[in-house]
Length: 138
Image (tube, rainbow, N blue to C red; front, top):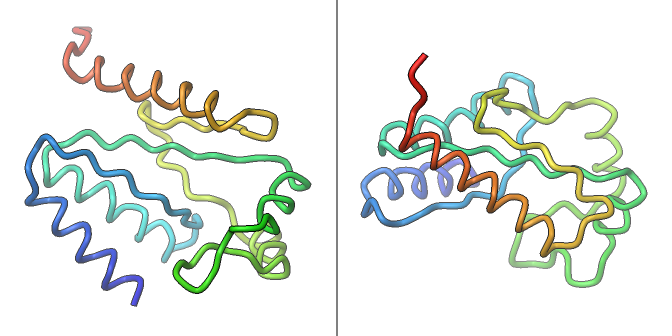
C-alpha cells in the first residue's frame, strides 16, 4: 500500500503547479529496494524540472531511542517506527541511503532544537536554490 500511495503522490507532484514545494519525510536503506525507492523521489523532481534536495537527520542512539518512545509518536493514523526491536535490527543491518550530491545535507540533531535545525535546513535549501539560479562557470 505504501508504494501505491507514494507513486500517486509523486505523480501528482510531477504535474502540479510549479510554485508548490513538496517535502517528503521518508528514510530508505542503501539496499537495492531502498535505493530504488529513494531514487523515485529524485526522478520525480527531475521530471518536474524542480531541484531535488536531500536532508538526512541523525542523532545519537540514546536520543533516538528516547524519541521513538516519546508520547505522541506513532499511533493508528501513521506508520512512524515505534518498535525498539525493529529499530535495533535496522541499525544493526541497514545503512541509510545517501544521494552523495552537493544538494544533500546530513545534520546531527542530537543536541539541536527543532528551531535551530529548521534554521540550518532553511539556510542550506536557500543556498542550493541560489546556486541553481546562479551557476558558477568553470
